[in-house]
Length: 219
Image (cartoon, rainbow, N blue to C red):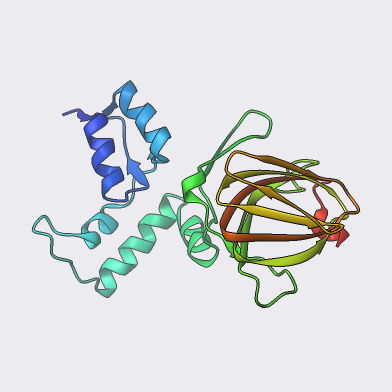
């Protein structure tokens, strides 16, 4: 019997925090469901998880099964037979900092709500700054990513050009004694060779683009 996935199923998956829905040749996905899945960052995967893994998650009554040695063995064997074992181990050892899709010759779509931030070392231990690079020097001559500054400031010497778009909050940039304040929706350009003090009186979230991409190597 064919299984139908419609918009309501995608909405339910989103509310439950589901990131992947597994489908097979007996699954029909409506066009609206496909569009909603893309919008919500939910992957429709044709790589089915082994039956052992399904049974190890939950019983129909909501209780959890216990994994015994035979089930663990069969689970690992099933993953290996499907060529998924290395992928699973890699994802556990190095969890991806964001969800993305690629197409064509380097086209890349990053799901903004999936981005996980790392601490950015500004040299100032009191500065609360985090970032995540989304486009690297291995992908482009430009670099791009997200940056947050929370109720703090830090000094920085730019050896590269930078464009910033303020997504939310307030961004302040002080150079040569003058402070510029950028609010949500504003765009800021900082030329190479600038010695500036970055800051935020609240919590600023910024999308940045730098050129060249190897900005970190130039510091």
